[in-house]
Length: 245
Image (cartoon, rainbow, N blue to C red; front, side, top):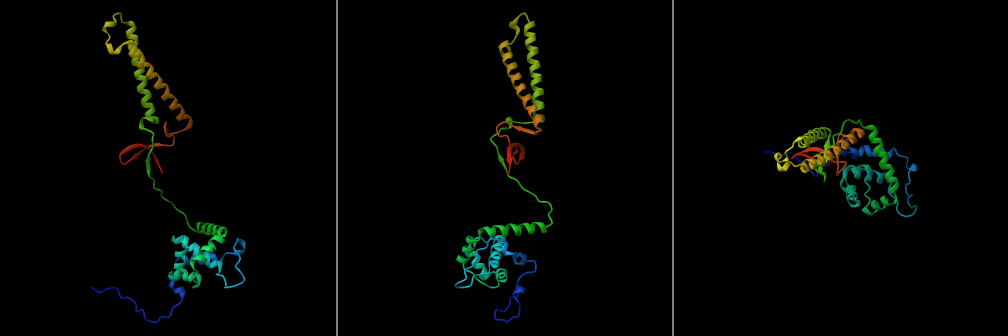
């Protein structure tokens, strides 16, 4: 089958540098932004008056903003972009500063670079029509166990259950007082056993009621005793007390 035809490398062509840059390219936006800046408002290190002419600082700002938007961080890669990237060559007018010049410019003008980056982001955010954004989360298990996590419904059920057991223990103790022949009472339900269970139930009931009162006062939907910020949430294994980051 035939392949897509390619151009002839030796063919002469008439074109402008502007034709190599897409009309919607971020390079055009960066170029227009930096050209609109009044650099007297920023702390730009003054170029030396002797020796070889310095590079236009506006070109260097364009290079750094472009590198920031494209994820090009190192001075060496920025210097390489000046040689091979058509958008960068268009913005800088074909000049090719080396990596030391690019690195030194950043070190000498770090404050102005920060200010210009912030101004660029401010203008972009003001021009963009914002809509909705979606954020994904990752769930990490907490040290808090499920037994130490309480919801309103869980506390209501436990308080109801403990009230019923407390009433039952009190009923059994009342019957014991009324019985004349203690031999008829099963060994496992001696007065000491029932009183111990009653005391434990009353202590748990008091504790759960204090949790319930705290949740009502704070308006919290859940209460975790070990990790206060952890919540009971659904994950791939069912439910777990976790953090959603």
